[in-house]
Length: 287
Ligand code: NDP
Image (cartoon, rainbow, N blue to C red; front, top):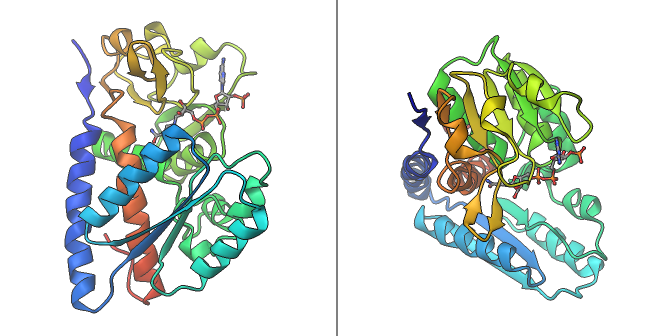
């Protein structure tokens, strides 16, 4: 039997629909959420992401503010822009597209964003809030993964989860979210011993490695739910971190690449912008 396909594209479309309805309700109160996206330099992949973010922001009825700065912008100028956006009441969410040019200190830039407007959830305060189980801005990619897992499995309590990858933007926050939902979580990385054996124990297997088809079919526990975060550009087009063709023969459910985690990431960015807007206006968090 082949695995159920988790349709991230359809899931994201229905999430955006829900967000659009909530934005319309806010607009009746005279509030229009605004998302500012800052891009420094000419990285082609980043340009594509920023374009789709802007487009989808407008489609749900929010205001989109794009700031494109040249590659050689001094860090002080970027910090000055962030300061202006922090103090602009029309801007509820600020996203600085990563990676930044080498001459910039990524941590210093991210930590200059007002944590209440940090819709990427990378500010050290939001990282700490998430880690201590408090109300935080949650990073978009793992948030999208969590939504799909809950939808697929219902409760995650007591499930064994293995997250392959320990980056600050995917692996670590993913593990925190799974832990918050009472899964038993192991984080694996390049120094992990017996990775295939470890993965075979996972009811939930999340791959965020950045290597095409890295996770083999026989690493998957029969019936497991597999979330493939990887986006790898190869001669065969975009592929994930999981050997999809093999894994889908064994898994219970699996996300495809493309059409799985990717579309959910931008939808969650819009969800975070909506949440930030609600909080800024003293309203309850949107459902
Ligand atoms: P990073 O490069 O920051 O992290 C990769 C992680 O994989 C590291 O923790 C690394 O371990 C681990 N790793 C590398 N090689 C191995 C190995 N041989 N065995 C076990 N672990 C290994 O990547 P990101 O977390 O930023 O991204 C991961 C993937 O997800 C990429 O393909 C990226 O394009 C994609 N992505 C997709 C998004 C989406 O919207 N769908 C959003 C963000 C990322 P170590 O720490 O030991 O080096």
